[in-house]
Length: 289
Image: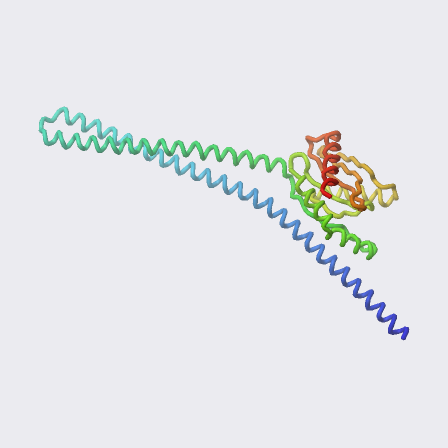
C-alpha cells in the first residue's frame, strides 16, 4: 500500500515536472518567434523604403528621357514650320499655298500638344522629387534612431526556480491585468524619447520587456546584483550607458501586485525629464484600473 502511494506521488511529481518543461519549451519558442517577427518587421520596413526609393528614381529617369525625346521632336517640328513658311513666300501657286498652310497648322497643333505634354511631365517630375525627398528623410531618420531591433520577452526562468513560483508567474503573465499593463507599455515606446519598456517582479525577475537586447542584458545584470546581495526592494534606479542613453526604474504596486517598472530613454532625455516621464506613465498605469 505504501509502495503504491509513493508511486502515485512519484507519478505526480514527474507529471508536474513534464508540465513545467513543456511550459518552458513553449515560452522559449514564443520568445524566439517574437524576436524574429520584430526583427523581420524592421527589416521589411527598411527594405520597403529602399525599394520605394529605387522605384521613384526609375520613374524620374523615364520621365526625363520622355521629356528629352519630346524636346527633340519640338525642335524638329519648329524647323519644319520655318521651312514651310519660307517656301510659302517663294511660291505663287494657290493650291501649293493652301496645302502648305494646312501642313503648317497641323505641325503647329502637334507642337502645342508636345509642349502641353512636357508641362505635364515636368509637373509630375516635381511631385516625384518631393516624394523622393520625403522617403530619403524618413529613411535617414529610421536608420539614425533604430540602431538595433527590439525583442519582446515574457518572464525569465531558471533551473533553480521553485515550481510554485513559476506557476505564480505564469498565472500573472496570462492575467487580464498583466495584458493591460503590457499593452499600455507597448504604446509608450516611440523611438524618439522612450526607446523601450520592461516589467520586473520585486525579486528582479523579468516578466515583460520591449527593449533592445543589449540594454536588456545590462538591466537584468543590475537587478541580479541587487538580488544576490539581498538588498532591500529597489524603489528607484538610474543608470546611464556609454552612449548616454538612460535607464530609469521605479517600484510600484497595483491591485496588490508589486512590480519594478523600467523605461529606457534616448540621449536627448536627461534624468530629470526621464524621472518626470516615468512618474507620468506610472500615474496613467494606475488610472487604467
